[in-house]
Amino acid sequence: MFDTVLIANRGEIALRIQRGCRRLGLRCVQAFSEADRDAPYVRLADASVCIGPAPSAGSYLDKDALLLAARAAGAQAIHPGYGFLSENADFAQMIEEEGPVFLGPPASAIRTMGDKISAKRAMIAAGVPCVPGYEGGLEADETSLAIARRVGFPVIVKAAGGGGGRGMRIVRDESELIGAIAMTREEAGRAFGNPTVYLERFLEKPRHIEIQIVADAHGDCLWLGERDCSMQRRHQKILEEAPAPSVPRALIVRVGRRCVAACKAMGYRGVGTFEFLHEDGELFFIEMNTRLQVEHTVSEMVTGLDLVELQLRVALGEPLPLGQDDVRRDGHAIECRINAEDPVTFMPSAGRIGFWHAPGGPGIRVDSHVTSGYVVPTHYDSMIAKVIAHGATRTEAIARMQGALAELVVEGIKTNIPLHRNLLADPDFAAGGASIHFLERRRKVDRA
Ligand code: MV4
Image 1: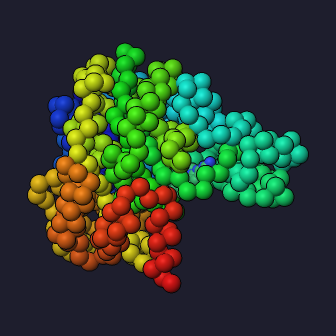
Image 2: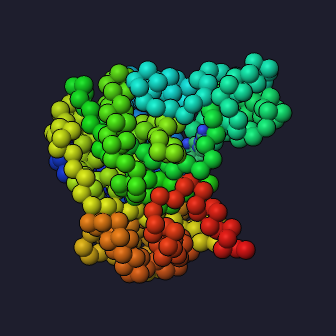
Image 3: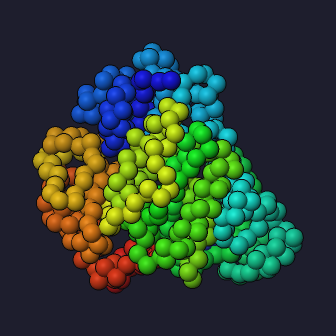
């Protein structure tokens, strides 16, 4: 079916995908922009091809350039990684029509999940619990006010074409609803080319819990446990862990099975993630991510599975090599995202890394493309490494992570390592189960 994969992404995930390809004896062709020409991982691939200039619009987001590169390099499959074109239904459809294999779900599934209203409807049909709300388009009028009253204030108005924290507005008072709908519609029309907005009950202090799934092309699908991604700032996750502290196993099992049902109903294939808010002992679906995620690593550490290998195998048409009863959950894993940024102002800190030393030892994994002398380009995401610690217990995973971060050296640029060290030493973090507001509220206390 395919023996060569074009990697249409950069940085640590490009290297991670190369490793998955090598595991299966697949050739990998690394696409790179002019800013990434000298990156060490480009040389580690079997072949490489320049796809355009540094700005992503002309390279990692250029659909035609990537398809041309795949054809020129003899790649019959394209892996989009995360970000960039990974959840672009038009790109997936172009690839489906042109012949190569898109290493993601069918374009139809990306499209359904890309529209947050159709996503929620699909979930309700499959019995996945959703945040109570109204799964239809709203106008800035009295009808919407009646709908919001029925749902109950406070509510949150969300753009159907948004997601990941873009295009939403909290409404606490009835008097503000119609104006909020008008403004969100206006912004959504400009940002996503779709002014449709919907509405949900606003949850005040939830945790962000997500469930990983993988599906093959033969109608089989597995849920691979949950992750807690509540440690975030401005919708950027900083630290993730698996399993989620003090979320009842029975709840995950029940909802995990419904996620599998939803995947089967839509003919899903590949890896995917169901995002939930967790409050008052319940899980409420908000969105689905139809890609391999940054934090897939913590699920790998506790299940012992290689998610990129599975992703490639199911795309090759192989049946899933294990059953639901074979999915393990051993110990606890934590991932710290190491970003090239100022730990206080969060401004990006690009430039040359002088000395780089990656930690190691029992239970430590580092996924990173950087080396001593590597130049962090200004054009892309600031994440330069992921440090993952695994232990028999959460306490052990934290202790191992602290050891790893004590050993990690990144000279020449600013990083958020001090923030991680500080967080790992915080007794409130150690207690586990903090809400999505924890990091931002804690910073305010620090500054006071
Ligand atoms: C919510 C919510 C509270 N109630 N929906 C933000 C990102 C997008 N995926 C959905 N988001 C939220 N939706 C209801 N009904 C709070 C958030 C939210 C959030 C969710 C997950 C992780 C971080 C967040 C930070 C702020 C708000």
